[in-house]
Image (tube, rainbow, N blue to C red; front, side, top):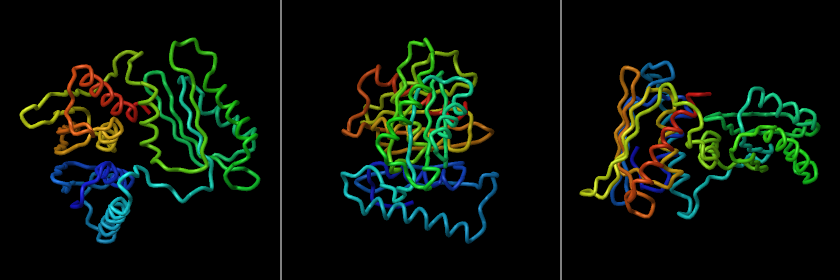
Length: 296
């Protein structure tokens, strides 16, 4: 992929590959002077080489369309608004517990809602869910403020539960538009919920993340070693992007079920990480981003 460099363009490209269920087995990332060139070696979701010309053409067209849209946007824009306003999006975070999704679904059913799609991630005793609903009688988004207020109150009470954990209270957001990729939004919600602050025992297959200063080149170097799995690259790049870091150079290598990732990063202000506390925070957040999907 060769294009003009823009903030978040790496994440958008990796997101396309992830949505197409392509496994990245090797990658080289490089950007300089407003231009970037990334090389991705991919297989299908069964680990096989892609040889079908129609599939290859579709992948190329999808990437070219995404890059064209990004390059056509004003530099101040960070999201691509969806044209789909036919459903209502509900976002919830709170304490995790057995049967949580069933309780939420029951409330929505009682309120005359159809659940079009629902995703829930859990990590370190916290849960985040994104639910898309419509009005059962009309099939369209629910926009009545009184009804939305009632739904919000009922769902909020479910998320709060009767837990005595000293954790952040339940949070909720309702919108009639979808602007952010669902997986990215779940990452953002759990990051904001500070799920990287561990409350449980260590994850049994904890990733190994290091963050080192590379002052002679003006970068911070991030290295990751963990079990390889689908969408791993998306999860790590998403984490760095949402923490407002830019990847200038990177290498991704997988083999024998293990993945190795190395990134040369700077903050969006152009400076590398300057404190041990921030280095520790980046390590914790990357570990959490890797573990979230693994624990689903």
